[in-house]
Length: 234
Image (cartoon, rainbow, N blue to C red; front, side, top):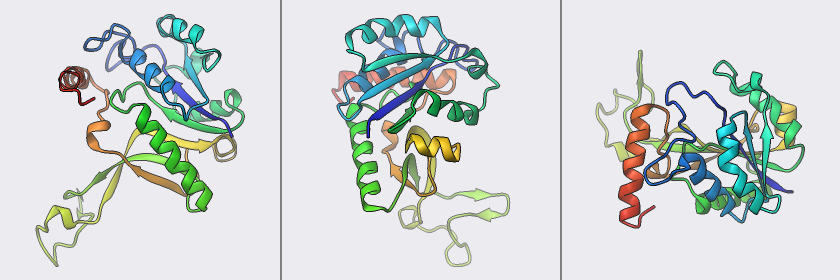
């Protein structure tokens, strides 16, 4: 089964203008350039489909497309599926039309610290879980061992037993961090979803899940990139 990365990258980001393509730290091609290099460096991926309606995205990707021997392809997604009002469900429904078979690795440019080795690790974990019959898909999560409440009280511990237990003893909860989702194209087609009925919750270290969603996130992530690069930690 071929493994194809699906990288949605629309024009018109509102919270962080031009976040995909503007210079990031020392990278003139920004988050997009970083992510394309990471995906191309991952041997576990057979193909990368960059789905966009942004001419600037196409211009940055063009030299890599030309050198990739067909491994990196551009998908010119219709504008009506690239607006700020477009739902994730609508894009999910679009995917099997452009990736009709094999496994789909859905990821984003906004996770610059999640690289080739991490993608390979997640794909291997997904394949092992599928082979064992324990799970049918994979979803990147961040493990939370902290005090989580809603307006009625704590969700992950019982204050009648212990008011403030040690956090390391709390049962974990999991935050979907949107770094990676893996499922086969049939799941997209039949369920209209990027995960199946039994997703493997693939825990990712928090330092790898830094997400660029707001302007201050962009500045913080850029500074982290410089610091980790200088320390050889990236």
